[in-house]
Image 1: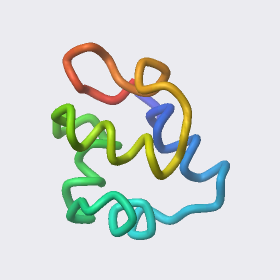
Image 2: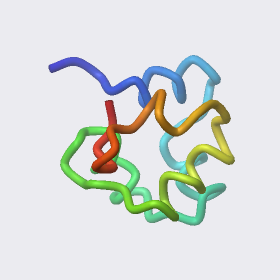
Image 3: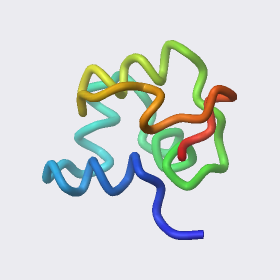
Image 4: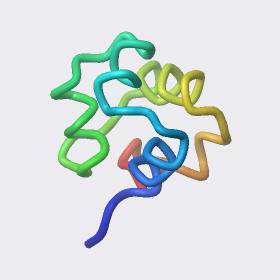
Length: 68
């Protein structure tokens, strides 16, 4: 499996994982886990990430909270 759509969009916008994590108030290791599909993001984390990178949550996350 390749990079998640979330990872690709973050990179397209020129953000590092650390930048998004800090702006979203999420630990960088948790952000990494979300992007690598090892961690299911709860609603609050999904919302916080989307506030940073923009777009629709459903474009980047499965209904379960797993990154697409």
